[in-house]
Length: 298
Ligand SMILES: Nc1ncnc2c1ncn2[C@@H]1O[C@H](COP(=O)(O)OP(=O)(O)OP(=O)(O)O)[C@@H](O)[C@H]1O
Image 1 (cartoon, protein in one colour):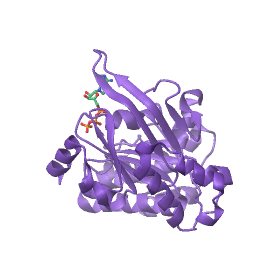
Image 2 (cartoon, helix red, strand yellow):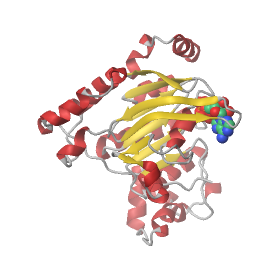
Image 3 (spheres, protein in one colour):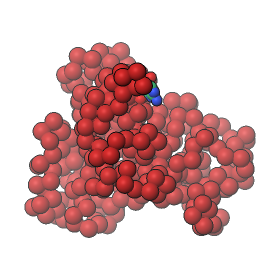
């Protein structure tokens, strides 16, 4: 059952707040990340100033850095073949690729649902294997394909995470979280059996947001939902990014969805990132497997 929580309200900067050293950080990103680097630069240039800029040094640093992340199955078959990537703060990154290419494994490494080797995944510059795993999962929350609500009401679900830390959310705080997930107060006392899957997914999102995560990991969060529920979730994700500077990493099989909401997309094929592109440039992917995947899913 889903028990991970994590959010955050990341603050984004404007170009006039960038120092020379920060610009150098972007320029020093590996050459394999050139499109990604451009994306970061563009993001920094265009993010609306709804949030306050935080510490100068924080602005340019990626939220996540992944270095040579490898995984093999028990019988030695490679699942991830030395993945390198950087996820900037306050962007929506889409991860797409054929079935079995390692997308979920990569996503799960980011909050240690799969334990990555030490020295491979860094959150705000810190090796995540050095962090307390529960604190990590509060900071880096996850939403799955099928929402699994706990027993009890919607309020009980939303209060669950903070309660583990000895904090009882007021009804008003619960209501605000529901609103953030685009649900109204009529849902407060409903149980999982009384709401649709799409509504349950939004409750699961509100429950995750109750822990004030800095990052949201989403594993095909709308694949079980109808188009209207899908749009509701997409709208909420875009709002979380724009208004709260949330960093969002989303695995999706829907290229159209990625094009609707992602700022940057990673194409994972056979355990390797073969392209990092802006979503509107997906048709320019060069890797043959990537092209085939894109043609078939188009
Ligand atoms: N714990 C494990 N032990 C052995 N093999 C595993 C394990 N976890 C994943 N795999 C294998 O690793 C490969 C990648 O799995 P993963 O679920 O990450 O792929 P995916 O790209 O998310 O696939 P899908 O799009 O179908 O969900 C698959 O071949 C899967 O069978």
